[in-house]
Image 1 (cartoon, rainbow, N blue to C red):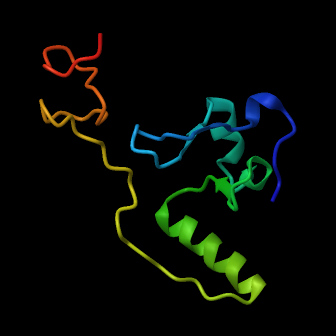
Image 2 (image 1 turned 120 degrees about the vertical axis):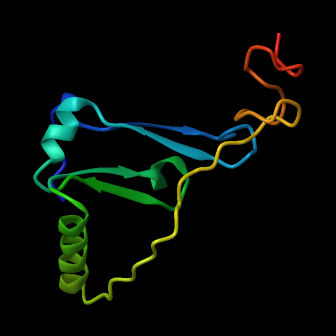
Length: 120
């Protein structure tokens, strides 16, 4: 792991304890252009959430394509003597829908114009 010491080349993150309003914490990561370019050739940026009381460490790196990413992960695991396990499920966060208008939003009040549940 080689994290940049230059602030412009570092990722930015925040924790949202309430997530989407559903009580599930969400990690939000922003990757500035300089950080994206820094990571382009497999350099890393890391986040140690154990410092915030969560038992998770995050490592982000850039590469050419999916096959390149998988080969790097296989190489790292091989060096550590670990098997590489693949899981092709969609782990994307699903939006929460307003119970009244049915559009993507929060369960405790919609922010979309025209919804009867709109927050004032």
